[in-house]
Amino acid sequence: MRCVVVTGAESGIGAACAAAFGGCGDRVAVLYFNDAQAAQASVAAVEQAGGQGIAVQCNVGDEASVAAAFDTVERQWGPASVLVNSAGLNMTGVKVRDMPLAQWQRLLDTDLTGAFLTSRRFLTSRAADVPASIVHISSIHAYAVRAGGADYCAAKGGLSNLVETLAIEEAANGVRVNAVEPGMILTPMNARAESDAAYRKTLTDNIPMGRAGDATEVAALVRWLSSSEASYITGARIAIDGGLSLMQALGA
Image 1 (cartoon, rainbow, N blue to C red):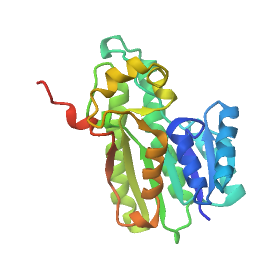
Image 2: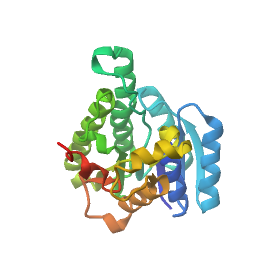
Image 3: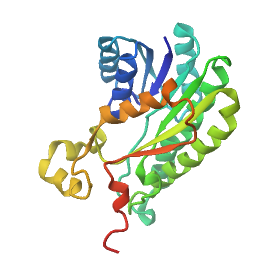
């Protein structure tokens, strides 16, 4: 029975990942930012799937908060062998010329520095003789940039390099590090697309598979990357987007 830490696990992809690991019978720490009720719902989903769950508050962009969260998990279950970093903020459509520094810093603190802090804490406490996996939830916008997304795209681009560097550094230590790069996934981060079918169609018309993805599809990939079946995969960046990222140069 593994100990799995999932950040941003109170909703969306993080919640789906937590439930997926519950289905493996794992012990899953549901790290959440501020919605304790949603986090408890994720814990219930983990337990309903067959695992054990606890909810732990964590601001991934704050070093002390990350340390305290991992301390809590380790007191209950010992060191984790799987880390899924799903905590993140989305782009807001603000252009660079209009973007306050506070907005830029807030997004990088969560989407990039948070990945650094949680990875570092995970690595320094894991059991050296147990194979380990880190999976970061990135985005196709790490390379397929959008106007109004400089903060988000920069953070995800930086995350790509963090993933690849960690993969090289930790391979000899039995730690695999990979990134999953979703395209359009129906989660609360895409609330309008979830609730407005007409608006959603204007977006899915650009996707070769003709539909948005579901968080459970991303979670299945994350679960597989963290399994022994993916034991020779590290430093990979895997798009899960229905072919959307292949469309970026059409019409030029």
